[in-house]
Image (cartoon, rainbow, N blue to C red; front, side, top):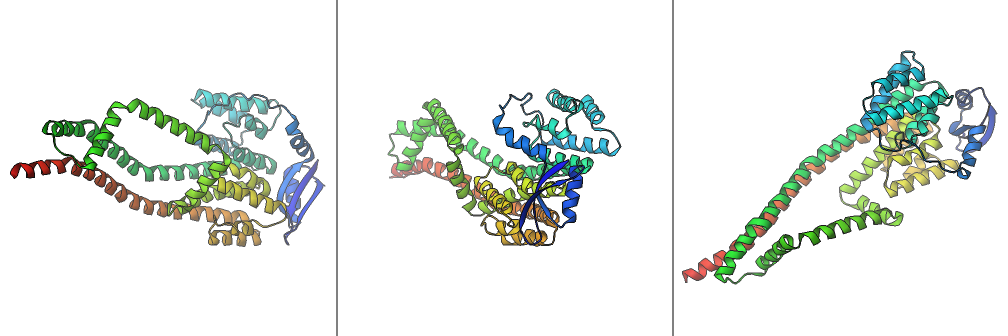
Length: 411
């Protein structure tokens, strides 16, 4: 079988050529024996199919609904790893998982994948028939596992990657839970004041014909607006949310907003570290599965929706494709801390890129945990203070006219 490859030599030069090998795994071993870092490696047939892909009509794909969450994919990867390590073939393993899967949609997907393999296709090809369930990263790692004969190891790393992603997500949700509860409580208190307390004070001041300060008049106006014009307020909020959503779909607007977010004090640094940690976590898992470097960079685009980081990945991909180094490309971006770029560059120079990327991603995760805790400690008292100020202003605006009336009555 003939393979087409693109690789980087030890002195940083990019070479492209073809070689004969019995399998993709044998071709990869031959290139590594020559001291080359594989950027891309495909069979000649795969290269021709990819070149012809834009000419094909995109057929509607079945089962495109969200049949599996992260937890389901982690469990699926763990089950496949266990069954394959115990000596089971792919089809019987899929049959066993299909039989015990409770979710009808996920069971249908697993059954469809099994049928694809039974028809003679590879597991990767069967998974790619369901892009709404299996991401390009998932499929690439499985493809590398099939090519190298290390499919159980690929599923183990997929399970670890999904578990780590879940842990980070839970950490973020946990950090946001208390501020969210405070926000709801604050809105509830303000709603109670505006909907019930303020109208009664307004009726009292009207009967007493009291002269009201500007702040009190403003609060009464807001109460009138909320109580009597709430359908228009809801419609306006819905229209604003829809308009904002459509604006965010525009690449230029999204890029500008992402840039502003990354420049925000404290929050910008946390966002950059979280996105970079997610990308490097995917890199580490894919490189450990011997996915070529260039393909790893390309597929990791799914790990981030931040326009600034997508632009960075494009720059890194272009640099690597032209013979440059990952570490140097990352060092040129203000989004990547110098210590992170230096660690990756050192690992790349020593031929230990996968190990260095994995180390950096774990370090970022641990450091981000402490950073999130620090941000939460700042946000919580700030929100409590804001809620106290708002309630205090409303109370002061309502009670000041009472004090004026009491003073006037005393005279």
